[in-house]
Image 1: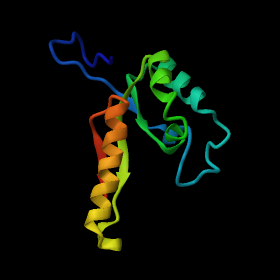
Image 2: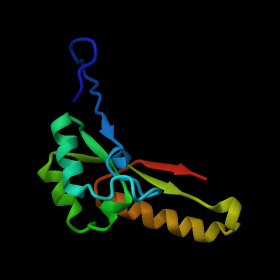
Image 3: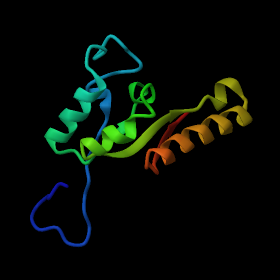
Length: 116
């Protein structure tokens, strides 16, 4: 939790990290040497409340919930790209989004960062 400017009332602010600071799916050479667990350790030590779902976490999807718990982190969101304009296949995009939302739900997340 982060206390900004004094006492916290009934509202709490939780700050999560984007793992792109450690690893980058779009440019794998950036951070490919950093293990997933190191990213989670760092987030915990820095004081983040959670982390966003990134592709390296999907590779360990079965053990990811226990790692989040181990490092006292929550899944804050999950990025999802759509290609409706490029592919013009709404059904395919709906199915892809549904699968993504199921993964987030399984991991305890409830926010989708969506971009076309």
